[in-house]
Image (cartoon, rainbow, N blue to C red; front, side, top):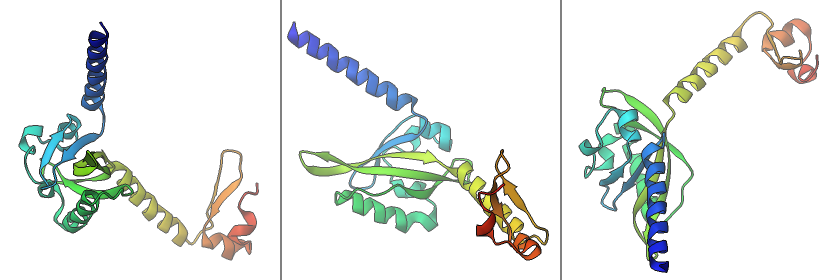
Length: 180
């Protein structure tokens, strides 16, 4: 009876794990020490357009942008040495022919104290990167404007001014931030 309960608990745990992996919005993957992709969840297909079967058993380097290849290999080698790394960004090839930007969180996969590969999660941050670039360009344009520009919060508290504001009013940016 105890054994049946343990087997049932294990089966339920495995099902929860499988459901989590299969329904995760981010790509969850494993890579062997030789660099071959050993597992991919369905998010890989949704995000890249490639079928999982098209990449399983292939080198992970083939899916990276050529300019990111050396950086990707550097992280791979560090992880195989057992290092934990901060999240990092690499561009990934889509079936459509373009690239997406992904943020990778990767950890060594260990067994009996030895690294036997790597486990990772890749999140598509392409839209976030594009929005950051748009904001950077807009901020540069606002900063270069000849007219004074003031940005306030919903209560009228000043959050930002451009250099023209200082020239036209004589007040520095620091003197007015947080004031109504």
